[in-house]
Amino acid sequence: MRKSKNPLSISERIFVERLRYFFNIKRVSAIVFTSILFKDIHTSEEIRQHTHLRQPEVSNGAKNLINMGWLKAETSNPGGVGRPKTMYYIAKDVNEIIEEAPNRISNIIEESEDAMKDVREHLESLKKRGEVASIVKDGPTI
View (cartoon, rainbow, N blue to C red):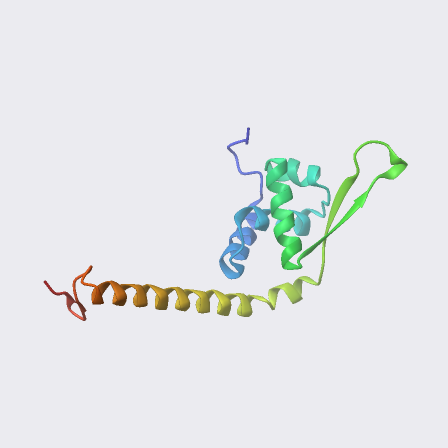
């Protein structure tokens, strides 16, 4: 069960929200990345303890970041006893990641424009079939 108090500092929470806004990434992924960046912690267990996220959330957030090229994972098993630990590291310079923001925002805008075009086309086809009222600038006609 998660604790109700947010364990992240104000600075970490602001950074998480900026990552979510400017990069359109999921909250959990933003929290995982921020924890590694701010606290220099690297194992799932350390991230889980710092953030109060559940283990599957940490793993899924890290996988998303690996797929984005922001994190890399290394598995180690010192002494060869017990389960191996996965260590997460930032994969590239943070400034390179920051420079990705305009491209990510452009992609979001492009996807939104495509979605709006699909909605318009769908409405037009419904209108032609008589399933919706005609649409004009001042509103629907009856």
